[in-house]
Each structure stands twice: as C-alpha cells, then as structure tokens.
Amino acid sequence: MRLTTAPPPSVVVGHFPDYVEILYGPHRLQPLVDRLRADVEGHEHVLRRIVRDRIELKSPLEFEFSYAAVDTAAGIVLLRYFAPHPDPVLVAGWQAQLIYRLPRGSLDRVYVEEVPLE
Image (cartoon, rainbow, N blue to C red; front, side, top):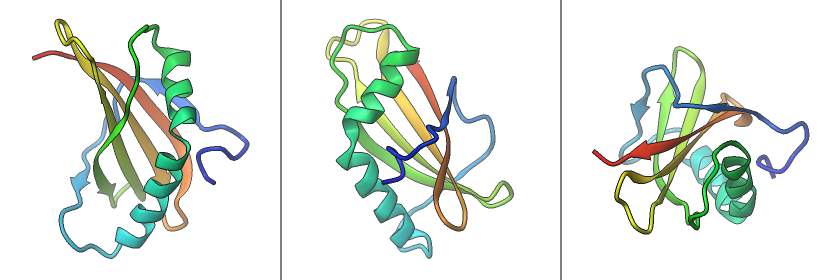
C-alpha cells in the first residue's frame, strides 16, 4: 500500500512542471501502472484527504483516473486523477498528480490543484 505508507509523500499545490509522455496502449510499465492504480483506487479516501488538506472546498470529490505518463529523464511515472465539479461555473474540478520513482514505484510526491473552467 504505497499511498498509505509512512512517511507520507510531500504535497505541492500546483501541477507537475516537467514534460511527460502519456502512455498509450501496451507499454513495459503497464504492470507497474496497474499495481499503482489498484493501490490509489483502493484508498481513494486518502487521496481525497490529501486534496482537502491543501485546497478549501465543500464539493464532493469523486476521482477518476485520467492517464499515466512517464518522464524517463527524471525517472518517474505520473498518475493523474481528476474529480469534476458537480456544478462547473468557474471551476472544472480538481486534479491530483501522483509522482512515483522508477524502477520500484515508490510514491515521491503529489501535486494537487483546482482546475479552472476554460
């Protein structure tokens, strides 16, 4: 259980600043991504708490997996989750980007932010 292990990951309000390549179709990292997703989705309440501790909001948070990406230069895998706003007037929703170190997939940090409606 990587999302719930101590010490907790560092959390940054904002988004991952570097370039990532979104993983499409079969990829050598797919087994790792599947394990990481199972952990996050099995502990979604932890993800909600991480976001609520950094961003003040009253809306419900129902996260959906968006994509997995890799930054080979930095040696990380990124999983992006998005929770849509139930009444999107100014805010589309909230995202969480979980950054895992390769090759083992240890959770390094989490980026959380409000996503404006464009």
